[in-house]
Length: 288
Image (cartoon, rainbow, N blue to C red; front, side, top):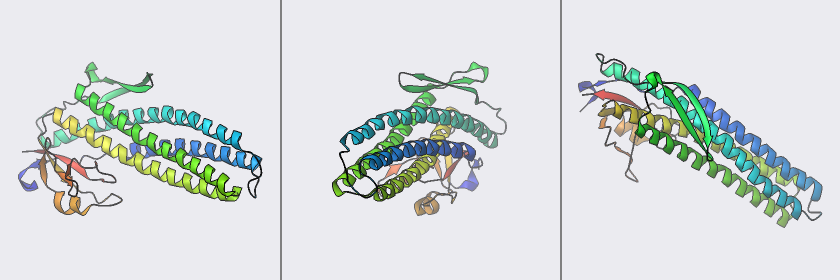
C-alpha cells in the first residue's frame, strides 16, 4: 500500500530541547569526574615522579587513585540515574502529547483519549530510581508502558556505566604504562586529555542516541494502546550517518506496527525509526 491510499499523521517528532538538556547534563557530570580524576593523577605524578620522570615510590598514591575510582563511579551512577529518570518523565509527557496530536490528525472525529502526565516525582528505592507519574483523572499508567520505561532505564544505565568503566580502565592503563616507561608529567597530561575528550564525545553521542530510542519506544507503545495498526517510515536526512537503506527502501513505506520491517539488511534485525545508532528517522501513524 502506498502513502496516497492512506491517511497519515505528520511525522511524530521529539522535542529537541529535552534531548539537548539531557545531553548537557550527562556531559557535565562526565566532565566533573574526568577533571577530578585528571587532578588526582596529576597530583600523584607531581608529588612522586616530578615533571621529568620517575623519581620515587608511587604505589600508595596509585592505590589511592584507584580507590577514588569507586567514589566517582558511585557519583556517576547516582546522578546519572536521576538524570535518566527525569529524561524518561519528560519524554513520556512529550510522547503523550505528540501521540494525542497524531491521533487527532488521522481520526478527526475522535476526542483526545491519551492522558498526558502532569506531575513527575522521582524516588530512589533500593539503589534504583522509580518514577511516579500523576496522570489526568488519576488514571494509572499502563503496565506495558511501565515495562517500557523500566527497560529504557536499565538500557540507559547499562551503556552509560560501561562508558565510565571503559574510561577508568584506560586511566589505569595510562598510569601503568607511565610508571613502566618513566613517562613525564607532560606525557601523562597529554594522554589523559585525549582520553577525556574521547569519553566526552562518547557520552554526548550516546545521550542523544538513547533519548531518540526511548522516545520511539514510547510512541510505539502508546500507539498500540490506542489501536494504531500501521505506521509510515519517514527519513529525515538529519542523522550523522544517513543509511541508504532507510532513505531509498524504507522511506515512505507503510508497515504493521506489530511487525516492523528489517532495518539492517546485513543482520536482518527488525525495528522502528531511531532504534539503530545515529538513526534520526521518524514515524507517522496511519489510518487505513
